[in-house]
Amino acid sequence: MRLTILLLFISLVTACTQSGNKTDSGDTISSDSLSYAEGIRMLQYEGYKVVEVVDPWNKERLLQQYILVPRGKEVPEGLPQGTVIRVPLQKVVVYTSVHASIIDQLGEVNRIVGVCEPQYMDTPSIQEGLAAGRIADLGEATAPNIERIIDIGAEVIIASPFQNMDYGTAGKLGIPVIEAADYMETFPLGRAEWIRFFGLLFGREQLADELFRETETSYLSLKELVANVEKRPTVFAEKRYGSFWYISAGESYTAHFFRDAGADYVFASVPGAGSEPMAFETVLDEAINADFWLMKYNLAGELSYRDLRTEYTPYENFDAFKNHRIFTCNTGKVPYYEEFPLHPDYLLKDLIRIFHPELLPDYKLRYYQPMEIR
Image: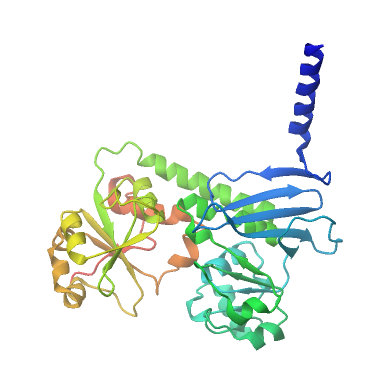
């Protein structure tokens, strides 16, 4: 008798495993596994999909839950609580250049009807759409032109959330706001994997998976290239702003990039995944002997050692300054922010070329360049 019950139990478990889990309403559910992203979960139900966006500032709760229902089909009964989104999306407003670039790479830029802060949108198709009047300039993301959003018939707004963010009038229009918190991922491939969410939104799942797998393969092969390097140079990043120098913590996105590129990050022991304000003297004490110093800026011209010394004379005390081992990225001249979130392998290749030039002797830097000596 016990053996019969045991066999019956095993058969039931096997059946559930093969066909998926059952909800109370009888719908089949399966989890679409993500390998690296920690801030998003995707669930497949019969007739709809659920995308859960984890609150980056309180991972015990959800920031949003989106119910994706195929366009043209009836909304199923008994849906879970959440924001219903008809997919594929048709008329989309995008607040950031990163998400505009992802949509462009999925071949769906024609779905974008409005953008905020177009002066920062370097994607050629976005600029062409703006010039032709197909895409509306909605002004600043913090105070978008609400009348224009209504006039262009926007169905959805895609935005990057911030802690306790209030979308103001835009959030009261009844237009769903998709909060894409990809920038809060701590692993480079985790952020890139969010393209799979965009694939669901635009009906381009297969292409999104293909693009991510290509990136994953390239990134992991580059990471393997430096896995056994004998010497790992030390590195720190950015510069002070105002009274503080904001340091990326040891489990941050930046720290993971440096680690994967075969370098030792000076502030790897700083706890957390965010950034910490530090006094200049503290940074100098910790990073004075570091081998490399990387920084980003947005200027019409190129930053030089003389410019850096003029800006703040104590910068010249770092060994990286004295030894001319500062590398800079002028984000006003290269598509850094548009590319690397989806293609972290591009940035990783730059970093490996800087830290271990002998491993990529023929590679030409894409984003960073040695700081001008003048």
